[in-house]
Length: 313
Image (cartoon, rainbow, N blue to C red; front, top):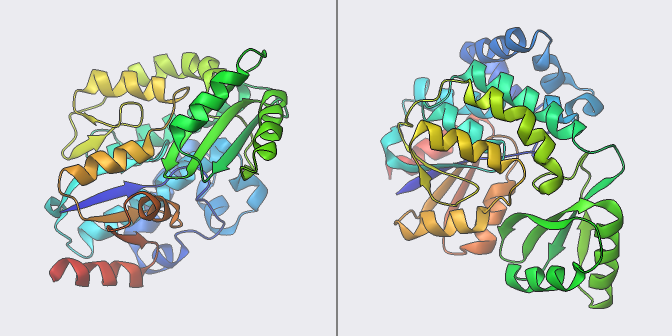
């Protein structure tokens, strides 16, 4: 059994999807659809940059969806890959929107609009320079939660944003509080890496963004997914459109339970994961958590050919 994974923010790079754009008219059509929906050339930003524009959250989010959906459509329409082999779809943060689009729950153009608005709302929720995200390495999540709890006598927001993998947890919050906590971790010889992000995502500071997105998401048409979708907030399958909407709103300020999602998918008998989108960050996270699983990141035509060969075994 296989599962499809869809990456989130941080996987973007200028030129992503170019190999596919150059080789398939249907990819050119998808990129054009994204341009028309946004009323500006997101396709040019994806293919040519500059990097500064691609890194803007309001561009990053629809850009990654566009590339992920392009790869998925090629698998389905150009290579005739049997999608019934994939029992679960799961996306990391904005990647959940990609999964919903590919599972026929959400229209591509609606998702492009929502992610552009989501990016703006998340960027504007906290003034630039006042928030921070920090990767904490080689620590289990429960240990980290205990340490954060000991720190919470001090004022300020410091919360777990992403439980990505064994030994890879992201915290998010107010810059002063995060830097203070980082100093405490350094004293304990725990390695940390500040993330190059424009806002402190997936923490309570994002609640204003969730308020803005609430009405937009609720007014968008969602259908029951054609495949099993694993939700970020619960790490469980979600099927009902109203529940999907509510959880997408909560997702903005809640922990992304990615490690738990991968564990739960694996318990169902899935042995291989296929990453649909730029980069291979999710494949790395899977291997950290489930060392016996196979991972196939798909970025190029050759990657797709290799996957087709693998599925035919």
